[in-house]
Length: 625
Image 1: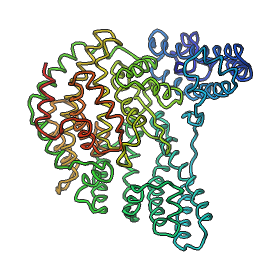
Image 2 (image 1 turned 135 degrees about the vertical axis):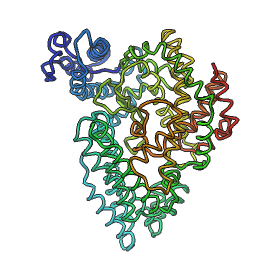
Image 3 (image 1 turned 90 degrees about the vertical axis):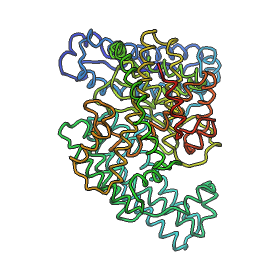
Image 4 (image 1 turned 135 degrees about the horizontal axis):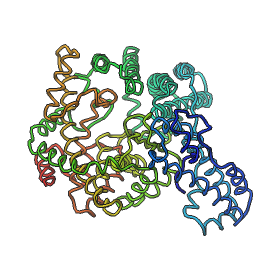
């Protein structure tokens, strides 16, 4: 089944869409007969049911083709980007409502044995749809403004009851289940609002809701860990260990968990408030003072490091957020080796020159959703299960590929529930480079969803490993560009990726060294001194306009950027292998998933030590033209 959007009326677009009106008069929703056919599909048997199924699919596919045609021929249809943004935003939810109803109805239809036997001969994936969990449809999931204070009160009350040890276990368990249900609602609502504030970045409601929920998210999850520690020290622990299925690693984590003080929670909430003020509203607001906001963030983050007893904020995030198995000193040494390597800069310039000759071909090629899914489905050449994963992605609606300007400017994969659901988000910029971005993010999606849980050694994802998953797939897929794309576009995109690899290596090293200075210096920082140091570290890039205020990670995910460097080295090593060998290594990487340490994984799959200078030199030698 193709992915679908709601149809725009072409005749109305030709006459009306040049105006700024975005009222419902300017487009039509899905054919009114759709719901009739949907009912008929469910209540009928055999061929009659199947004919209604085909009719429903025809309506949905018609929408898809019409909408994609408008996107690719916006000049023909006189649809300005503003018109497109408004219309697309309005029809998006209406589309998904119909899509989800179709999937739910199809599952119900297949419950009848006669229908199952008939459909099985006609369509693929019948068993997939029959066993589909229709409660996992993203766009049918709603969030509510959770009463965070009520959850806080429930946790605190339960802790007191456990400490008293006066109630029997069943009463305590009942209270725990009541609170835990609310905590899951809070966590899911926090994840969903995060996605919606990115999907519709000009909607202040989602921004406000996310800020309110994310503050309670920090507090309540800390209190939950405190509660687990209280349970561990109580007479109820043995029963809880059985009922919750706690492993020895879980128990060790609970025993060692350090409860946060009021001052620590206050500082984390101050940081969170500044991050929210920067994020979506800040990006779209030309008057937003990035420099002043960042200076305030630095001061708060240094206080956080002090409160958590770390020598620097880098050391704090290294362990508390990233749990890296290499040291800050290792990253600093690698970054300095990269910026002092003249050949990296020379090769970067050469590939940029080659790419620039044909870059218009990339810039002027717009992609629709079908183009992107075609590329992702071809990832099965590298990872055989990719086609199944794409089907799941489409069916659940766990993605947003719309080419709108009123979206978050970045691309990412994010978890949005406690049950392991992930969402793939692409920015609204629309040209052929989206092929690369889509494959990159799909690599993250595979790493999060396709790993062998028996190979996990830790409880949380390692960002360096995650980036190896995405970049390795991105580079390996270049071997199939010529089979998917025309020759000129394929070769231009490959040159672009080689240039980007070298540019990312240089910029990642420079940005990391700037962050290292910011969070480890004892000098009094000012806006002027930040600008001066930024220019000093980024001078090696020799690019006008490159500044820390252009790098969202510096604000939102401090210390992350070095992962683009550490992960590039093994990813490029895989790319340089004979293709079949590289594919084997990539599949091993995915099997190990994200919940293992970086150096541990590199060693397990037989790759070179990325912190050895010889490894870097070998990578660069293979990049020579």
